[in-house]
Amino acid sequence: MEFAKWRLADSPRRRRSIAGIDIRGDLKSGEKIFGLGERFDALDQRGKTLTLWQLDAWDSTAWGGLSNQAYKPIPLWHSTSEYSVFWNTSYQIRADFGCKEDDRYRVTAHGPILDLYIWPGEYQNVLREYTSLTGKPLLPPAWAFEPWMGGAVAAGLRSAGSLPPKPCWM
Image (tube, rainbow, N blue to C red; front, side, top):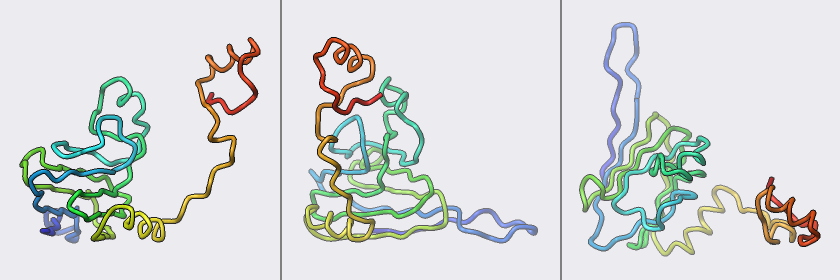
């Protein structure tokens, strides 16, 4: 794994500061990359370039716009080579997993602050470590596991008496 940081151009009125952090490494033949949040394209992100930046990406992902954007980006990835990486930063991340170079990855945080966590091992064990770091989710109430459907469909079925008053997304 190679680490690099780059600096803004020197200026007499401006101090040098770190503009971003770049990490590159090798991908093994057949290695698959999973994770990186709620995505709408594929489980394996190998061969893709991704943007991890929080914005309301529903319109663009649902209608075929920004295919590299996630609705809920999470900068955690798992490799079938039994390691996982978590980028804890609030800055935009750009990740290339074998898209530009088939056997290399490159992940760039567009800002100077990054906590980098690398865990060896299978993802099931890594998830325990990750949730110990970031917090474990609470079990949702029982009603959250009932069937969900959109507002117009739910309203029509409920008015026809075909749908009990269970959760419906509006």
